[in-house]
Length: 411
Image (cartoon, rainbow, N blue to C red; front, side, top):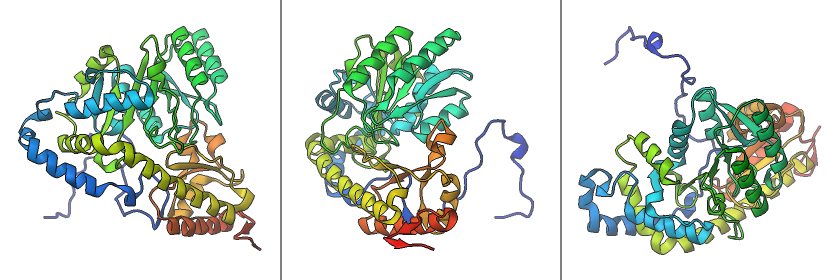
């Protein structure tokens, strides 16, 4: 039923809400945005088998909130994670130190709502996850960007920022880092810098918030130990996800934290439990298959990255600068200074190509103005080549960059 007069909710809305969302109109023809993964590499057959097996065995427990396993999540999945984290990241933890959450975004929310109040300060990588930045902005928290280089967050810059804040009587609430396949730059923080960050954390009494959501997707399969694993004083909160290793739409992530923090976050997790069926299926699938699935996935992702870098070199030449990431699903690209990627985003989208403009992923809008993030996991090899060609043509028409495209001089 429709009426000519619509109720006006506007006067009832509280101040500080984000801008209204646009209606969903579907993905662009050439979509290089978001944290989407390779649709051809979702282990559908294995997940189907896991669904049937686990539902036949334990489906009746869906009648009870949290499957009668408590608010921290399905016990077999937490047990799988304790073994995986020990093997892959060096983290020695018990299932009681693991909480299953609805994707790493809920993990961010729980940590933030436990530790932060309006007006607080946090230290964060200068280029970082948009979801983390947006949350801090909405909470009224001051996010201070720490510069990165090819090996991640610079410890000299972190030390200077901590000293400066101490001099001004400010103790940041945490140091947020994506140390293992950084988003968006793809760098991996060396073990020596991880140790340096821990020393600074202890010296200044500032905990570390370690986001390890991309750590499974390393080309050579070798990673430094997690910062959480290296800590001797316990001042680290660690989060991870199955979104990049299995499938993002499952919305399953996890938090590893000392019980002192875990108990406070549990008191804020008032959703009656994250999706139980997803947890059951993941546990059933991952225990026998995770260790063989991930290397296949990363081989496919690496091939797509090669296609993307070849296409950029062909279409943009030296106008597109980038460092090959050490893993993950993103390439961070620098275009000439006269290219405004916020404007490029709009005109490219009209031509059927979606990109993530750099300023949305940085605390420094000036530094990131001509940068963009491209997700290479979701499009096919052909879509990558075609999409980069369209992007180059749009960029040339709008900004005169590149002057050469596909080895043909443009007038």
